[in-house]
Image 1: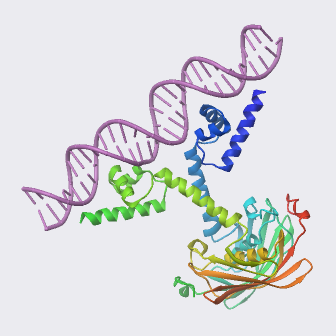
Image 2: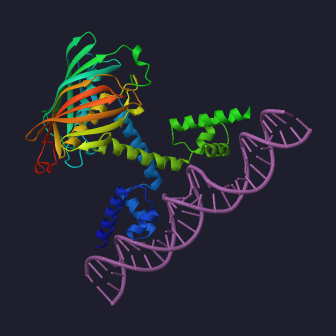
Image 3: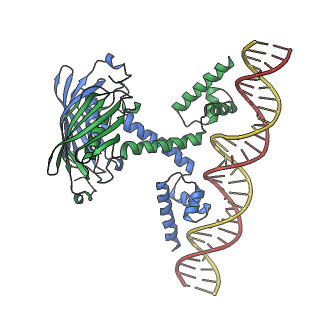
Length: 195
Length: 195
DNA sequence: ACAGATATTAAGACTTGGTGCTAAAATCAG
DNA sequence: CTGATTTTAGCACCAAGTCTTAATATCTGT
């Protein structure tokens, strides 16, 4: 039965670290009521790195994720792109995109995927101007693999009319029509103070 | 002139750490061609903590930010809320919300603000279903302080028709109409596999 | 109940990336 | 050239480990 005692402790260890990854071996030893050495052995057995390494990984990881989420210009992975014509992107719905209460993905992620894909299709420093007929058809849950297809359906001077449809397992879950205006490069440099 | 030499070095130090915060004093000493002790003095003078502390702060910070950005159900700060009727929220446009090329805020942030405000007004585990007439009127740059006002303009059974307008300095920059359907609590618990 | 295996604890030497302190050497400025 | 400032150096110490070796405990099957 000692095996299970050990295993239970190791599970507890994992949970504690999930709650608070900044715990030292000493603190862990106290809360789990074993010696430091046992904690070290458990970490070794489970392949859990030491506090500093954990911290470092988190810092890097979170930094990357932040960049990916917020300062990247494409939300989702671009799979295919015909400039000025069409594009396809893929996005995985991760657990942190869903609402805590319901488990349903928050709508702006789909919107972001569609929006950025539309902007990618229009290659130009571009400002999105108008949208019509955005529709969420089915609620999405974590784990879904969303495929967005964008198509330019009309072009008038600087205005692009773009349809984006998102599917999950060949079921359409979202669609939007964007009107994107491609701006000339010059006016854009003055980026202090909105308007 | 030694004062300026020192100051220049300290500026370089800051820049190096901005590029890569994971540098040890030893590495910094090498790249700046001074002794470790000088680096330590410089850090002390500038109030820059040691590598581990920096890493820890980044990890915490980034984690918080991640949670704030992605797992929070409200994007922006809720200023006022009359359930089922109206709501007001505020969001600050930070530099990481803008497109690198143009400095213009990516549209899905405004969408997210409007969307989450609309969902907050309808208090219920709710799924957004349809949108019409989303309009981006003016490009937004970093530093803007966006005020979103949501108003329920019609209600049919479980469907709420909501207008959201976002203003920056009393200038309207965005508007959207959402149709939000409030779901009964029960159907929602089955949150494995979309659909 | 006892041997053998498994698990836990202990102890000591060493590592990284520092802090804090004192002191010497170098550089600069008037 | 002198005094102040800046830069190096050296040493003791710390946290949070690693790695190793060894001693206890605890369990398990017979």
